[in-house]
Image (cartoon, rainbow, N blue to C red; front, side, top):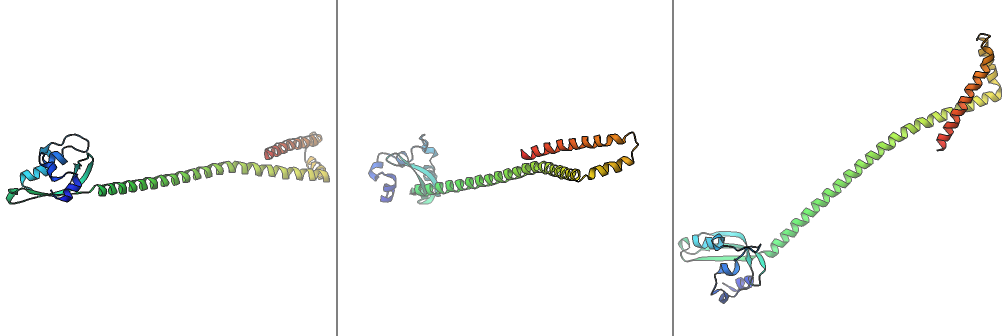
Length: 209
């Protein structure tokens, strides 16, 4: 084990004289459960004389913290008859940067989706408010037009009354009506006028409200 391996693992070469490398640096998984040696990919590659290139694992530092590593196993001699060379490097910082980058991307996507949802909600609310205003405005326009018509009609009637034209119109109309009905014409006319004045008063009240 060279100085670079000692720096990464925290162990000195002499610390491993009484223990295997697996027992020292690879004895448990990240969740704390034991890592049996017959499941260890480093040990299996050594036993089989096979090679491994840039595989990922988690080692345990001498002080007890876990760190991510990338390792390679290269057999020496035919089928690893002379052993194997194990190379590994600490990639904890790289993994942390990748994690932070992915979290930033996810947060950005969530923010984008939230903004899109907010804009759609605003558009829906705007359409709903426009619809309500349109539906409320149309009946009010009809009422306003009717009230204006009544006001104009009443003004014209009052003007006719002031000029005395209504009497001529009543007399002209009475000439074409049987004699028995003619005396009642002014009363009917006055009744209509009373109704129009009542409608005018209601219309004015509605406009005032």
